[in-house]
Length: 305
Image 1: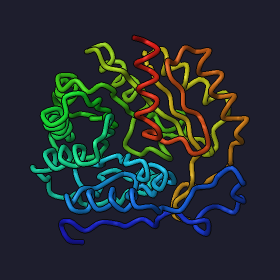
Image 2: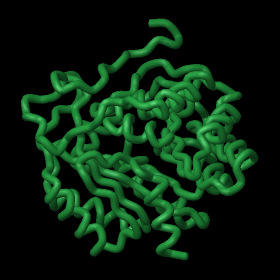
Image 3: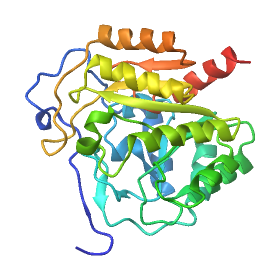
Image 4: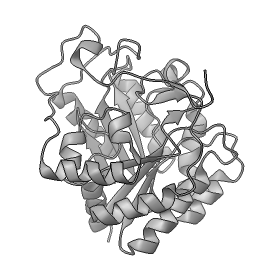
């Protein structure tokens, strides 16, 4: 295998999933419209990556039609191999030092009010990629003063000063997904640690005036009580915003889908989250970490003005 080769992963299709029939409420519109094409052109022209494409997000049509895109920095190849994820894994790409400026130019061209930046895991980098996140924030704010910035980061395990770099960069929202329940971590989030991820969220919250956010996938074999316990753990660590969405199996080689949750079950989770004190909740079959992130953040700010 060459230095920059990787294991590609199949994009989402009905045929690739488990034998459970996809329910009627899991529907997405095909990507089309002039705005979608313009968004795509801006991203391709600047040679940028989006998690919308790389993770085969079901909401790409809706979001790109609104000129919303979640930028994925630090290359297209992840050093982890989480069994649910559609991102390619293997030997990572060379770091693009011009990437933060290109991200800023794309944000300006798309005229975004709120931008979400995520990344692959980069266990090969001394800081896990924290400096690249900080540089993106700096360049974006140099071009657009009034924009709000949300980052969705890896766990930065064993990465010296990474958390300090993030806190100093002062994103408006820090997001780190717990993804699933502790019992499934060794199987699904190989290389991650539940307690470490919780502690990361707490350190960021305690370290600065930053909203914190985390998310869960459901349908992987967890129980409702286990979901509620993770939500309780999040609140104990001062997580402000919760997202809960349906896991959709990208291919037969990925983690098996065991259940489709009904819209009513998602509503039940939302009700419990509000009782627990989350300041904002998005719980629905097609909810993803950055789905309607700008709208939710505007509501969050307005409700705590």
